[in-house]
Amino acid sequence: MNADELLQAVRDGQPVRNKDLKGLDLSQADLAGADLSGSDLSGCNLRNANLSRANLSHCMLKEADLRGADLRWSNLSHADLTDAKLRRANLTGSIRIGAKIKKWGLKGAFIAGPTAYVEE
Image (cartoon, rainbow, N blue to C red; front, side, top):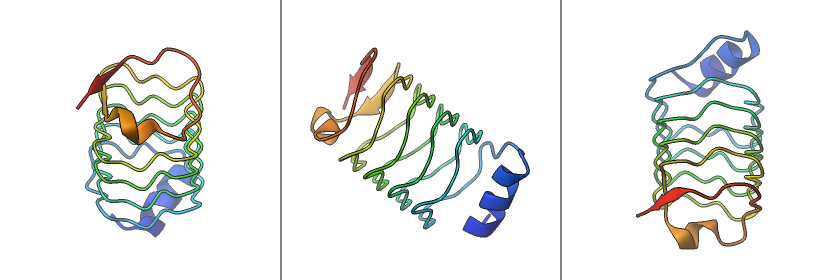
């Protein structure tokens, strides 16, 4: 699935679960409310993307660029954010239970609410 197909599916309200989306350029994309659960977004450029209220549970987000991304109220439970760039990302109200995040990767991110995550 390429970036255009993904964005069209999200606009149509279709879930995009368990897909290989590695390395896509989704900078500034509007993915608010998208169901991307179980998908592999490793290495994706999600800089300044709107992922508010998105379901990212069990997603692979290794080395993803999430700088400035809006992740408010998103579900990141059990997501793998190893080596993801989260500077200036807004994680307010997001669910991060069981997520794999390096503590230093959260430097400069906006966080409010429970902070349960697995230190990698």
